[in-house]
Image (tube, rainbow, N blue to C red; front, side):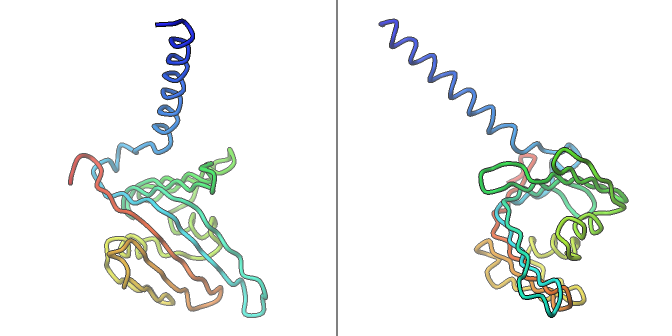
Length: 176
């Protein structure tokens, strides 16, 4: 084997190892939720701050979600795969890491309200992901495309919002 061919193979092998290492570090599995359900996909939220606001605010991200309302982790990614925010929670405590800063909250609902600017009912969100049409006051959910990995929900009171999830479900911890 020629020296140049050997060098090319070693460079290719090193590049593959580097890319694999990057892919493996993207989504850590929190120990407390390793046997719970997990979802990944894209989320989109469009909110109208007031009845008179002419331009709604929008938020789009890729996500990895693991856990339940009682404990878990959520990572939000931008269009190029950069981490926008990391969220972790357990009973009575939630933490948001964003742009190198960490903030603590009394619960996941308070954190999500601060992060998204609307009160997204997290208990209902987990029910929706499982196909349960739980409708908290002021929200209307559409699960007609749940089997195809799509959920949409409308917040009917001000600030009005439209929330859409395109997702894939998986089971962690070796369960089918």
